Amino acid sequence: MYIVMLGKPGSGKGTVGKMLSESFGIAHISSGELFRNYIKKAGNIGKTIEEYVNKGILVPDDLTIKLVEKRLNEKDCENGVILDGFPRNIAQAEELDNFLKEKNKKIDIAIELNLSDSDIIKRIITRRICPNSECREVYNLDFKKPVKDGICDKCGTELIQRDDDKEDAIKQRLETYHNESEKLVKYYKSKDLLYAVKLNMNSGKTSEDVVKEVEEKFKK
Ligand code: AMP
Image 1 (cartoon, protein in one colour):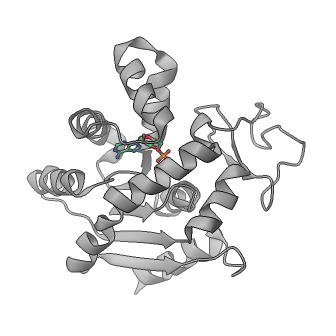
Image 2 (cartoon, rainbow, N blue to C red):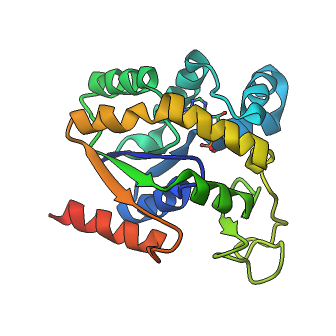
Image 3 (cartoon, rainbow, N blue to C red):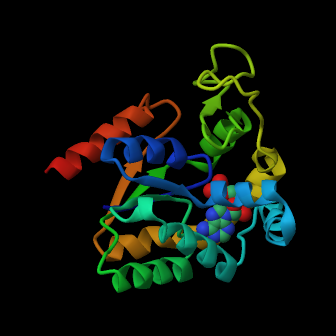
C-alpha cells in the first residue's frame, strides 16, 4: 500500500502518517526527517540541504528525488510506504508515479489534512520535537504537552524547537506550500485518489479520529 500525506507544514501529516504506518505495518518516510538526518551528519550534501531547509524553501528536485528514491529502494519499503512531505510539487509527483510504475506499483490514496494558515501558525509556534532519530515524537505546548516539561515522555531526550518552526520560516514555508505543493491536491483529485480531511483548531477532531476514518475507508 502506497499512501501520500498532503497538507501544509504543521497540519499533522507526520503524526497521522506515523500512526498509519503502525496500523498498516508499513514504513513511514518523512522527507523532512531524511533531510534533517543528512544535516546532522554534516558533509557537503548536508550543508547544501541545510541552506534550503533553514530558509523554508524546497530542496532542489534532483537531490530530493535521488535521496527519497534511495530510501524507497530499501527492503522495508517493499510492501508499501507512507510518504510524508514527498512529493512536494508536480515534478516530484510525476517522478514518483514513474518510479512506482517501473515496479508495477502505484499510489493507493493521497490523504490531505486541510487547516487554515492561521491555525497552522498557531500550531507550529508551539510545536516541540524529540530530536532522537529513533523516537521523533512530536509534542505541542497547547494540546499535547509532555508529562515533564521539555522532556520526551517516550525516551527522556530533551525536546527542541525546529529552527524552521520559528515565525519567519513558517511564513516562508506556507508561501512555498501555496506556490508549489497545493497543486498536488488537484493532481491527486484528477486521478480520483484524493481523500481530504477538513480540520480546524476547535473541531476537536484528533489525529486518532483521522486514522480511524482512513482505516474504515480501507476496510470498505
Ligand atoms: P518538513 O519536515 O516536511 O516540514 O520539511 C522540512 C523542510 O525540508 C522543508 O521546508 C523543505 O526545505 C525540505 N523538504 C522536505 N521535503 C521536501 C521535498 N519533498 N522537496 C523539497 N524539499 C523538501
